[in-house]
Length: 255
Image 1 (cartoon, rainbow, N blue to C red):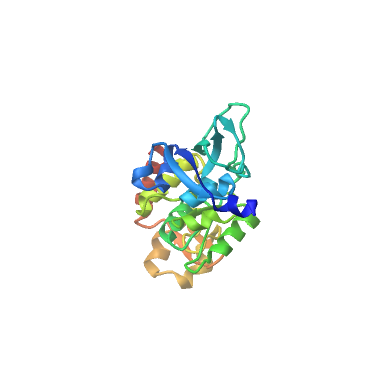
Image 2 (cartoon, rainbow, N blue to C red; image 1 turned 90 degrees about the vertical axis):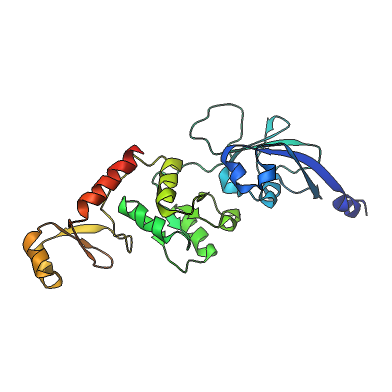
């Protein structure tokens, strides 16, 4: 009986979220200490996600000044500070909750980010995308192939199994690309024009004589360097758009 009564009692604690974690909060709760009510003894991970912040975005949690992990159970009266992933931080003793960075930046992208996927492929990043990816498959691919989930759907990042993921804030593809490059510090990792922007497979040099029948006569005559997609077999060459693409890539490196 006491356990049932305990579960029905409403308790209150105080949260404070820092930096970009505020993007997930309603305007009136951003950058302030605010009370949060609950019943029972939920974990701090469940409490944070109930407020709307995916656990994949969180790296540090302090309860009354003490570092805790996601399994900590809240009882009421606590003052909780929640911090995002930091590029570098060396303070001990603390419990880092963010997953360790992957050795290679590979991505799996949700159905809302097709244009971003193409732009990442242009820069040489291994990026999986389909316009019919279910959330469960995205999470499964992320785990099996050690890929970072990029999404506009916060719900995907609340899957318990999800370890590496990022909620893309902007809704403009060009700004999305800059956002991801800055978030994961990828400016020195470009391998431009090595992947097919359509299917993600590697590009390979090919003798133009072997693809003559697939080329317009003037293209065959005036261009010599060709790349063939090892997946969909699309042909690439340095046409009139090439210099514009190179300029765009150079600007991204210094932006």
